[in-house]
Image (cartoon, rainbow, N blue to C red; front, top):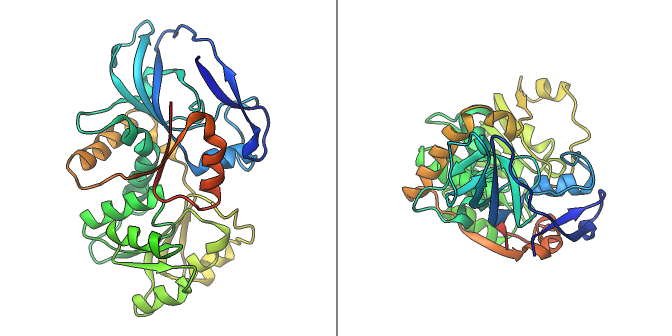
Length: 324
């Protein structure tokens, strides 16, 4: 049976319903792929809950990254062929056994990278890429702070920054997550369940603060993320796993040291040829062994509600995928 897990409306994780789908024929420039693995991300939770709008409205098939095999190609498609292993990241459409997608949004998976690894990292890995290459590109001598260092994006950033020789401090919740983040390359990891990350970061930096903060947490880390920045530092707010920081004021940027702030979105950084360029660099880091991807949670596609509950409840570590 070909099926999708569909959300008819915004709400709690229980909104997902299994529905049969008919396989359509791809149009010009499109490809039909059979999924082999699908990634799960916080953006899926934001969209399911109604915090972010669902792609295309409701009813909606969520899921913003995945991998699979090309089964049919539409007219004019030259970049991929039937049988190719491919990965994708686009807004929505992923929680299903098959999907039609524009061929120019597909990335071929190289030898040395499994479908599962590709599905678990195409969105998170490309997020890590643009954060440290475009939002704030650390230079030698910088110290930066990364929240949720044991999460999917955080573990990739830690390894990438270590390869670049950048001193990185991470935050994580609990001894197990701190140990995992430390292994991923963070020079220091602060257990936010035990220690005040602001006081500890300032102590570690001898009160100088950090050059940048990469913050996907939101409410629970604001305004602490600003407090630990050095003068003219960069606050990169790219998520809100604990909820939005509703008390943000523009004046805070001047109060804490003439700071800069950006609120980026991945898909703006993947326009045109940028998808292929960034994916090539990401996969090379994985193939070369500089970034190791550990898939710590795997759920059947039909159990996507459980995956959402566990991710939202911070019960997961690192990468989470759905299997078909």
